[in-house]
Structures are given as structure tokens and as C-alpha cells.
Amino acid sequence: MLSDTHAPRRWKSCPSAVAEHLRGADLILHAGDACVAAVLGELEEYAPVTAVLGNNDGADVAEWGAPETASMEVAGLRIAMIHDSGRAAGRLDRMRRRFPDADLVVFGHSHIPLDESSPDGAFRIFNPGSPTDRRRQPHGTIGLLEIFDATLKSARILSVT
Image (cartoon, rainbow, N blue to C red; front, side, top):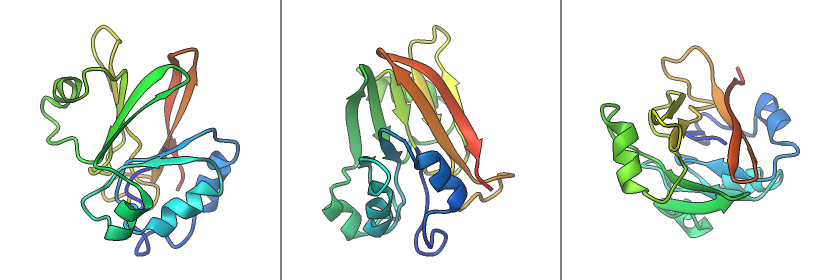
């Protein structure tokens, strides 16, 4: 999963370190700010793509089919996506209220990788960061989820720069 690729300013084409992880993916999630639909088309060459609109996305991204939020079931796990999850304080509880049926909420916007679970482990929020616009982060990052039998077996943030 990716977010905040910011093409064409930051993403000229899929970086090889990102492509390495996309090969063999079953599904690619893009949590907004692709900025141009061509990024999503390029990602579709690797696997089916579900994307949401970010605050910097052009009209062509909406025309591609990206809504403001998305909900899906992947191997029995209920996933919701949104670009901007709001301020950091109270984020976990706020996302739980916004998406009460989700097991996992994927978001972007901050460019700061995050993997946080509720105390009981029943709900999780995940921001993969950005592979191309790391801002103040030490590395560009993506997220990798392994889902089996309605269970999130692993969620990893991977450095790609």
C-alpha cells in the first residue's frame, strides 16, 4: 500500500524499490494524493488498485474512480480507507467512530508512517507514509499487509529509499 506519491513532481514513474514489492501483490491500496490518475494506471500494471481521493488529487483521479472514502473486505478482513484522518490526538478513537465496521483503517496525508492498534487489538490504523515525498522522515516508505482468513497476519512499514 502507498500514499502521497505526488506525481509528477515526486513520482516520475514507479521507483524500482517500490516495484519490487508490488510484483506479486494481490491488491494495491493507494491512500490518496496520487495527484494524477496516470499513477493509478501504472500501479494497475502490477495488481488491482483501490484508491481514495487526497487533497492534492486532480479531477482525473476522481474520474478514474477514486472516492473520498472506501470500504472493502479483503480475505475476510474489513478495511476502510481515507486520505486525511485529522490531527494525531485522538486519531485511533476518531477513526473507530468514523468506520465502526472496519477492522483496519488505512490513511495517508501526513507522510508519517504509523501502525497503531487499539488496546484490545481488535482495531488498527495504518499509514504507509510516502515512497517519494518523505518530508522530515528518514526514508520513503510503503506498507505491506499479509491477510489470511479474516486476520491481519502482519503489517509492515518498509523503507524504499
